[in-house]
Length: 232
Image 1 (cartoon, one colour):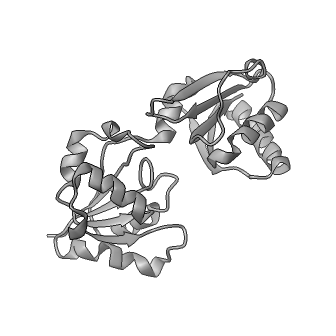
Image 2 (image 1 turned 120 degrees about the horizontal axis):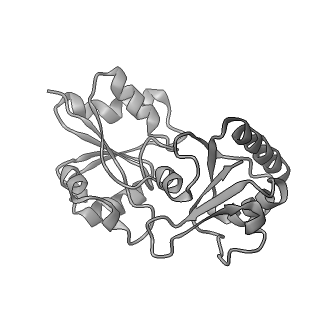
Image 3 (image 1 turned 135 degrees about the vertical axis):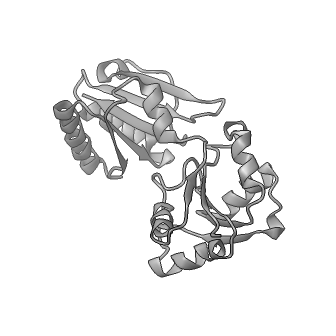
């Protein structure tokens, strides 16, 4: 029988192993073949849950991985072994290069099994209080302020037209610039939300109209993993 491909969620930050259910850990423990986004990050997590690292095989899968490299990563399933797919943080295959391996597994007839764990995208939608029936994730918007301003005005217009929550992610060191550009360019009545350090003790989540944000929210957002959302 073929092995399975397990999609393994990982913690969203340090000291957050409690966010991984024991049932998920029980499935991880016997696996010895892993496809990982970053080896160092993955091995740290696997060591914390009790996987014997020296017995495991690892394959790196990132944005530079080519299609010809994928079959080798799943070869163990043909011998009846399970393979685990790990993102650096959160759910693999979501805003993550692992999606290409998942699609290849389907093409080969390998059973794909998603496991329970944290997802920053879903948790931010849950916590924002905006439209959870219709939402659109954009990944990263432009890092340059003039183009970011255009991006934000465009997705705000789409939100106003469709009543859809728009969300995106940013490199932590650009958080403050993202907030500044948003407050300068979004309509005062548009809802704007930021969810930082999800699942950590330093977690910060705030939703308010742009005009409320301009009064100050009393939080330092720079260099903290964050999700951004708006609803016009």
